[in-house]
Length: 454
Ligand SMILES: *Cc1c(COP(=O)(O)O)cnc(C)c1O
Figure 1 (spheres, protein in one colour):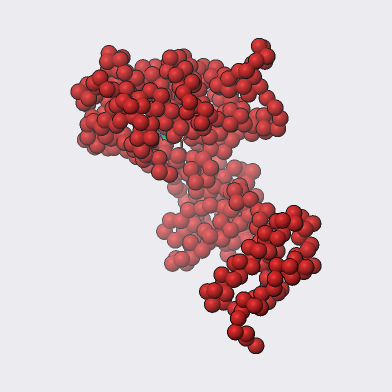
Figure 2 (cartoon, rainbow, N blue to C red):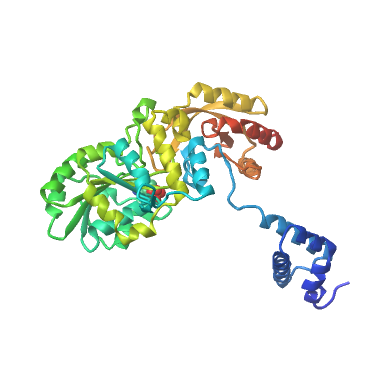
């Protein structure tokens, strides 16, 4: 039987709250939460009726409220298995952390600490003291500090050193890093005026010389990170820029992006600029991320001359961009791995880079043996805007599908697994790269494969 007004068929909030299954939710949820869940479901149901759907039966409404309640306590942010082979995957949380880093973060998060307290003097201290010595030792800088991320480091450096003045940068370096981070936009935010020089493919020292004037606050170099200019190209080295900057008394800022402290060529990768090389070549300050090739928590690190770092530490923006105490503790623990020369064994990003391809092949074969699939050669990517289009040779689990949307459907089922598994698709095959999967997760991957592939 249909009534003329389906809205009237809906039970009231009170009637639903009186249902024993809804009442049972109060064992786990506050009274206000249960009321909110009931209201949300009724609102959604009225919207559905407005779109022409019939009013649901009471049982269906109650089940929907129970489902809503379960979802309310499921975190939206949860662990996932990265089988894409992209090591520093920005969408999947960038660098996984070492055990020591996680322990240091937990330890400081749990209680009070001397974050901004000088234990010797019994007086206020500075949070910048906790990372400075390590960063100085590792990079050879006079002074160092850390902020929330490298975008913040770029904003702080440009604001403190060149607000209201000109910053000279090559057209080949006006880059977009991803997620809407564009160097020209950040410069506009800082109040510095952008002076573009050279061309997309060629910039010479004389271009910089001609552009420097009374209004110049700084020369800036930005590492191209996520793309390569190849062919008929010319650029100016940081050493040449440093000589010019010193002669003309302007600051030289080098954004190297990735924060690579180790030599990447030992793994057959091209060289990645290191902060220590930039400083040695004469940059006044060098900026880089904490959670790309450095392999630590999210951070923006700034190393350079004492005078410049002091200026940055005391700029009002430094307070707005400051790092959280747990991240400071974690970064300190990650930096320890470099000081102890154990980065390749302890830091997950470097462990993955250094992983022998034979070991990866053995694991891929172990996965393949459990289902109907093969193992093929492929390449893992560094990601995070580091070392574009180079990669590391790897072995991939390759699951054939019937084509069409079948590969998409399988990739989706893997994403629906708990924990979600993120794979990639190439030519109707779903590909999984063991390099970026922690060996401790192999059992979970195999269980998911057996449940989803057939
Ligand atoms: C990644 C990157 C940034 C942004 O760093 P975040 O830590 O993500 O804020 C800035 N500059 C360069 C050159 C980069 O590669």
